[in-house]
Structures are given as structure tokens and as C-alpha cells.
Amino acid sequence: DGGITQSPKYLFRKEGQNVTLSCEQNLNHDAMYWYRQDPGQGLRLIYYSQIVNDFQKGDIAEGYSVSREKKESFPLTVTSAQKNPTAFYLCASSMEGARNQPQHFGDGTRLSIL
Amino acid sequence: QQPVQSPQAVILREGEDAVINCSSSKALYSVHWYRQKHGEAPVFLMILLKGGEQKGHEKISASFNEKKQQSSLYLTASQLSYSGTYFCGQVNFGNEKLTFGTGTRLTIIP
Image (cartoon, rainbow over all chains, first blue to last red; front, side, top):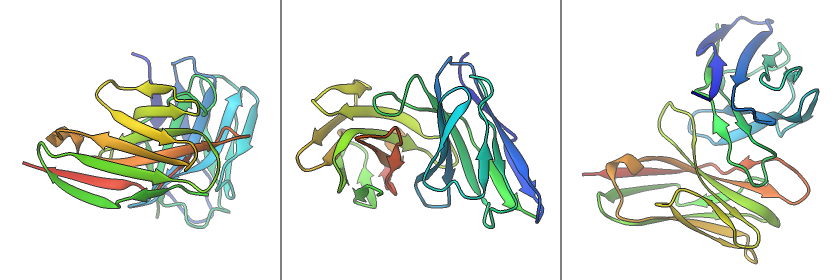
């Protein structure tokens, strides 16, 4: 079955540590996105990529980094510069850009600080 | 800028109707609607495009007033499975970013 796979489901970060969240899709979608969701809040865009080897900052990119070396993969690194990383992280993809295409979401990764 | 949703929360009895509204202060290219159940990923419901085109599930009804930059989602004859948090998202002209509202929590009781 086609879909988006995020791993791990739960992740714990120590102070000063960088951690990487994985996102893989087999939907052959061009565009991929990373969102952050805090309890009781909406989704905020961190980074997005419309094609391989290209990505743009979203609304809250500080303290995060991404890469898009393969069409299927869009990993997110939460760096030590992100002082409040505890949140639910969601990866999504769409056939083309966000304007007129539905986004398909993975099941998310919950990140907590140790 | 984040779209504003209203109401923030609503409780319905099974079979009742509800309307969820989404407003923006900027000219919109499209409005998107998603539903998220607790602890799960959001699920796509509908896209409304400038010009009147719609994409989405047949059982979902929505409107998009381009002049007012407003969209409404209509839930009729609600079922228990409709419970969850509904998010609208907007795409402005000139970019490919989907900006979500803060959500409307819908609770359906038997």
C-alpha cells in the first residue's frame, strides 16, 4: 500500500543533542512538508520541498534543518539551537504543490526532552 | 497570517448539523479542510479553489466566498465518527505554503 512512513514514533532528546526524524513516501509525490503541532494547537510549517535538491523555509524554520536528496525521502533534523523541541512532528506529501493538491500525512513522531 | 476559525469548539447530538467557519485577511488561492482525531494524523476532506472548483469527498459540503476570503464547512446529520478537530488551511497567491488555522473541536454525543 502506498503511504508515508515516519520513524521513530517516539523520540527523546538530550540537551545539546541533534536528532533526525525520518520521513519516507512511496506515493511518487513531488512535494513534501514538515509540520510541528503543539498540544491543542494547529499545524505550523517548518520546511517544504517541491522538487529534489530544493527546499524552502516555512514559518518556524529556526533550529531545524532538512535535506531532499531523493524524491522519496525528506528527513528533518532538530538541532540543539531549537530550545523548545517538545512537540508532535508531522510529515506530509502532495502530488504537486500545496495550492490545489491534497496533502497526505504520516502518523507523526512525538519528540520529548529528557 | 493564520486563518481564524469559529467556533473554537462545538458539541452536537448525533443527527444534528454544524457549520465551521474560516476567515482570512489575505487574498486566497485555495482553502483546504482536514479532520484530525486525537493522537492521529490529519485526514484530507476538501479543497476549494478560486473560481469555484472543488475537490474532496462527496459527503462533505463546503463553500468559499472569494470576495470575503471566507470558507464554511457544512456537516449535516452528524455521526459519532465526525468527532475530531477540524482545521482549515489557506494558500495565498504567490506561494506554495499551506497555513493552518487553530482548529475547531467537534464532539458528537449519542
